[in-house]
Length: 294
Image (cartoon, rainbow, N blue to C red; front, side):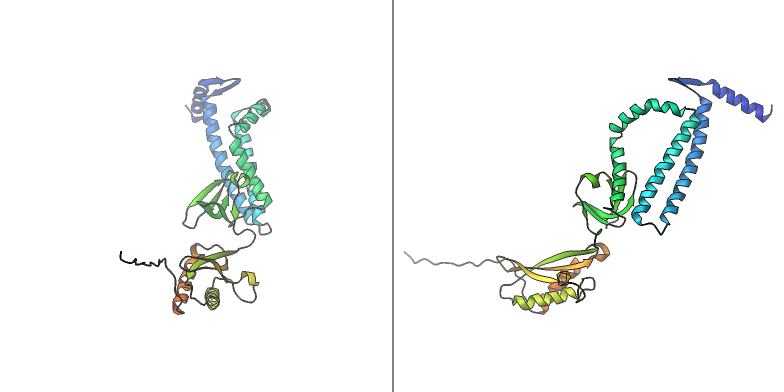
């Protein structure tokens, strides 16, 4: 018995195990054939998809937002082509899919509503240029980080401690968020401190402004507008001392390798100590009033 005859016998045996699904008829041979061919098609599609995305991202003439839009559209096109090929291999007449159009619409409106909403939201985000790669986004106190990747359903934020936050794209459309670095990388911060009431405040203000402005990451100098240079002011009058604050601008976010808040706290403390300026602490004055003996 030659190999060809043996293969025909195996195929005939597999075809004998058939079952019906509505108006469609399948055999065990059909299922195995579809699985093998489908696996090959999926592997080839994945290679084409990865190559196409790399090719798009290498285009220097396109900005980041356009690259992300084209990449997302490219993924959808590849997905649709693969889906149609698999249906054709399965032997399903594509014209019959029109019968299921209403059912698919209901499915999108109910079970797939969230997926469809996140996908469309991702397209809107990329087109309106509200978020781009490497923007620092704050959704709430516990969800903030740098945008590292846009996907069809979600956006990945990377925190300073190395964690990835997966945020559904719909969140950026339906909720309020803060984009710290999209328009301008310069950010303003402040450090609060207190001094005793007998302090020469005018002289102390100049000392603090010079000390803070000397930090290499703090924006300072005549080439910058006065509102971006370090500024020290009185915040309020406390029970034990004068509450002060110093405002300053830096490039980027005050965290990670760009963190300057801790350095400035130490600089302010050393400046006050070196100039004999006392830092007040809570205290109470107790007076004992003696009463005359009866």
